[in-house]
Image 1 (cartoon, helix red, strand yellow):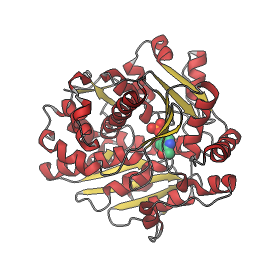
Image 2 (cartoon, helix red, strand yellow):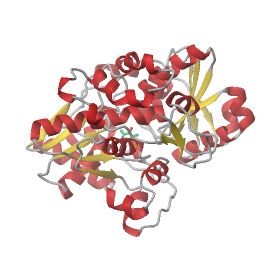
Image 3 (cartoon, helix red, strand yellow):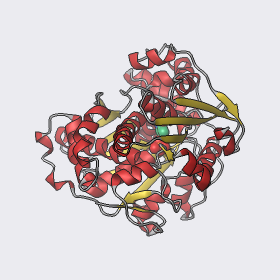
Image 4 (spheres, protein in one colour):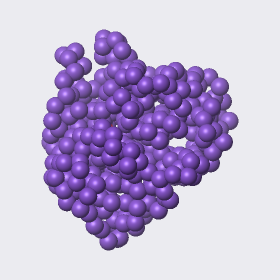
Amino acid sequence: MKFVSTRGKEPAVTASEAIMQGLAPDGGLYVPQSFPALTHLAIHEISSYPELAFEVLAPFFEDDPLKDDLAEICMDAFNFPVPLVTLRDQETVLELFHGPTAAFKDFGARFLAACMERMLTKEQRKLTILVATSGDTGGAVAAAFAGRKGIDVKVLYPKGRVSGRQQQQLTCWGGNIQAYEVDGSFDDCQKMVKDAFMDSELSQQWGLSSANSINLGRLLPQSVYYVFASHLYTQAFGKKPIFIIPSGNVGNSCAAFWALTMGAPIEQIVLSVNENKTIPDFLSSGTYQTRASVQTLANAMDVGAPSNMERLFNLYPNTDTLRSMISAYAVNDQTIEATIKEVYEELGYILCPHTATGERVRRDHFAGKPTIVVSTAHPAKFEQVVEPLIKQTVEVPENLAKLLMKPSSFKAIGTDYRQLFN
Ligand SMILES: *Cc1c(COP(=O)(O)O)cnc(C)c1O
């Protein structure tokens, strides 16, 4: 099994090569050359999530140096529960927020860190990871890499655009983790990372790699929970589920399309977005037009130029096919607030602002249908939005509470990537 760049200018590489490189040298994103079929999966015989992850991912690591480490990597990375919760009738929520930083990005970040640490040990070398975050990525990456030998991490986040608790999770680590507060937007942060990679001299000198959702090592493990949840759902309800996925950079939803391509029992994949409507506008007009991001309550989805769209264009090269495969709906801030309130009052269930976009899309377009809304973060991470709406304090999960008590520090910089290397 090999991986190729979406821009097609590079030779095919193995999974671990793609993971260690992050972005392909031609500026493209790595994608599998072909997808294995899940037909070999005797899913009912699999007893644990790490075991399922191993079964799903093994074909991708067939002739890879990490092949013999994969089972251990899965146990190391996926050491927390993945509950599928029924809200009512056929309406369920896949809670992906039980990892150390209480957001779904723990899945990808932990898998990536486990892979990289083992590769670096094998190769006896060091790396510097650059990660731009609109909120949750950086926290998950910092947590996953903190204390790992041979790896330094530089985390960039947009000033004033992340919540207090998110910022704490970016800045509380010290040691091999350095946080940078950038006077700009998330798109600026992302551009700085890309520019640093394109500076080949600097990139060589520092051994730069990425841990953003552009890294294959983040994407692949995210496919696993779509395989897991769609099988679980089909067993419980006798129907294939429709996934509704709160989306920003489209990494999470791209992983769902990969799971679908492998043959997971998925009826349909629907994206919910906030006021950053690049994708719904593309689907209705047929013209893909990126733009500057706008700030919303669902800040981890504040993306105007979703980088993983490049992978979806690669998966479905024909625009009409792509448009027929994806649906997407936008939800504005006022409606996010109303939905958090409505769902709490009706069902006693507390949504984070991101997940609220998904629940709104279910209620408006798929009510009563077999659905899984993907819950991307714990509401306690966004208490300033959520608590006034439900007039309750949200209990902080234990993992998060530990991080919130640590001392924090960061460097404030502008939007020139060279400031990261002073
Ligand atoms: C990152 C994030 C998203 C968006 O996921 P993408 O893979 O970027 O589409 C949604 N919700 C939360 C809480 C996130 O952290």
